[in-house]
Length: 200
Image (tube, rainbow, N blue to C red):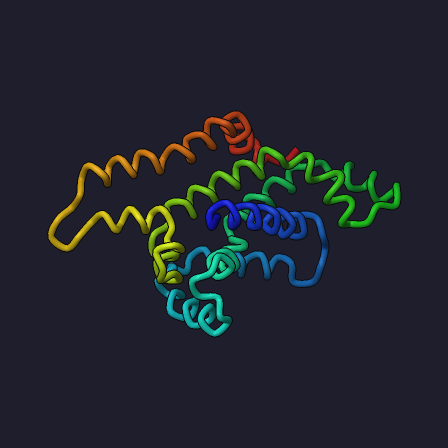
């Protein structure tokens, strides 16, 4: 629930932000984009205490929304989607404006159908990152029902003993969804990595 929900919301918001940075003209656009990229250089350990306090004061500790909302967008996703939209010919959106489409309709009707490979690639990255994350969900959850798979695997490791058999078996099982997702999206994944950032 956490990994899938975060992935779906992140892909949508990152694609919208990437389109805005690539196509829309507004004051301070480049400065704001640089500030977004600078957040990639801040380690999670620096913001974990302020993040915990913020989620606690919002009353979202130990909830799915408390896990999903802080990860609702990422600088890497915005950068990836912006690179893709920069490579799309401007003739498409100009023809949409001539037909009287709003900016939102241009994004939804013309751009979204074209950015399927990039969105699938970003979705794989987000799913893999959130599926394997241990520290972030461990910090924001306290009950066993809300623990993610990585946190559950950590429970097999005790202070003095390690249950190697169950731990390795659970680790292999936890890899199956990621492998299935990658095999399904492999063609689009390679296509997107090969073309993103190349201007026509």
